[in-house]
Length: 237
Image 1 (spheres, rainbow, N blue to C red):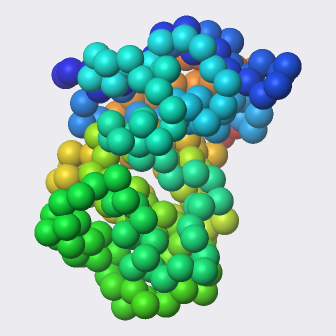
Image 2: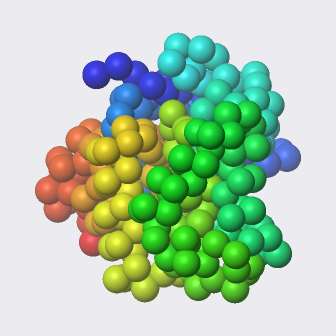
Image 3: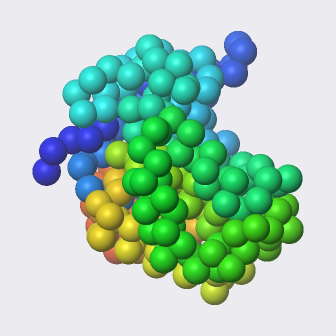
């Protein structure tokens, strides 16, 4: 498979505090990759660094093009969509307005309208709520809206930060099944940061384990899921 994203020697942190210590990883075109580790390992920092939201150094290549010197808005324009922890919905705007904001870098109005219908086909509840303020949605519906807004970018790569956080198990399973369909049918590549390692490994093709800002293991998600010693040592189950 072709590499969509290549990360080499990525360092990042906040102020004088270093969080990532030169990590290397890659994501194959059309695949789902998960980044796992304990709280404080640097998972969210990795996503923020890829988006240019924090101070970082190292090489980040998307389809062979360096994007590590680009500003966040320019990284969005080349097709990297970030669904942050906490969902990041615009609570005073309607569902439809939130989705339109996801396409603000695009000018193809007819295609934008088609993509909104595509979002509604995956998340029918959003169509029912399209004129409702986003802040009045349930937690699961807000997560769906955050993913839908990212899809409106037509992303090459979607970065998902703790998509199951605060959700009931049934809603989590529903959303992860939609992720599977988006990857299979729409060919959206994904990097998933997730505290629920079991559901993330069930979704992913490739997995990386992060510990105190360093990659300590990488391999097929199935191999990590089936290795009881590895799971107990790094994932706690």
